[in-house]
Image 1 (cartoon, rainbow over the protein chains, first blue to last red):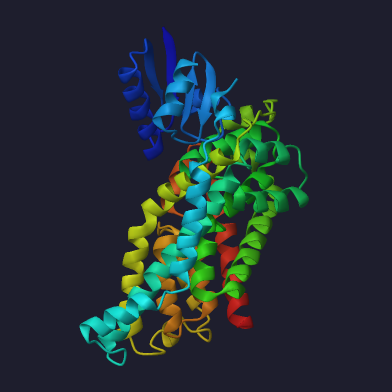
Image 2 (tube, rainbow over the protein chains, first blue to last red; image 1 turned 180 degrees about the vertical axis):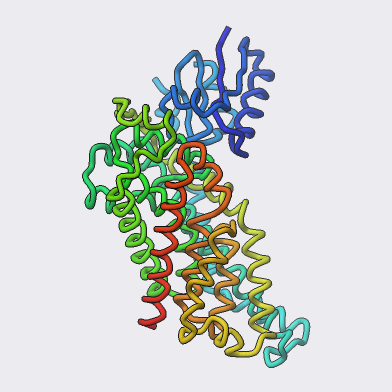
Length: 78
Length: 346
């Protein structure tokens, strides 16, 4: 099972990314656990400078933007 | 082999070309729309309503077109400058040159206030000095592409470049001063512990192909222009009303250059206000057209977009009140000086 985390402190783009990730995971039947990380000190441990960020299995795969569906699918299944 | 290498996606390239041609065609024929509209409705520019309407139908598309072009270009530039790259460039820089670099990079680095805290701490962790970090934090929102595009569109290149120069000076001076004051102890304790925690500022940038960069340009347009177009239209509408109905020189008595207290007052009103450049500029233009002094109006605009109550609240998570006060005080003072200089020169 994939461990998917969305880092973001509740900004508009962060929620957009979270919704998009959930939609892709549901549509592609990806076996994954989704967690939203909103605590700033926890977010800092990932060493990201721009939010939102997407972390898959402990690896930061995206930061600072909301990608389109195809790219998101690629990031989640890679 | 990456399928995109065999079959490069040419759509964004064609789209960019077509959009550029359409843009140039519309931009060079801006009078067509208001002219034909007035002719159709039988209105005349000599009437107040007719003049206000003409102003609106001419200005709104012009400003939106300019903004779209600049935002697109900035979207493409953003794919070359990430916050990570900026941090790597600023890491360990000394005061002075570091502040100047931070202020300049603040213009081109993608920045959103929701990332202010991770960016602030990320900079400190990688050994970017506090004052240099502040230069970035002042310049990034204040001297942004939207502000510059709108200033250029409405007042021409002289005002735009003066704003750019003054914005950079305020950012550099404010950052250097905060650095000199040695205010590190006014960071929240947990932030102090993180300072220079030897986080690597190394980064890997994904190699992007041109069609990706162009696509980011379009995304940026959708994101920014999609968000601010309504403010611009409303603002130009308000500006058109003032343009048509408020008598000439009405503002001169309130915001004219001979009224010395107009600059501090404008900054005082502007600091707690929260708006973006897009919302505030059309109002600025209208005020200016009615005799308000350029320095006063620009000081107002700078204080509205550089300092805001919501940003202070976000930064409160990492800064103690003393440092927030110093930050706001130094920047506000700098903006006032800019206002006075402008008023004295123009």
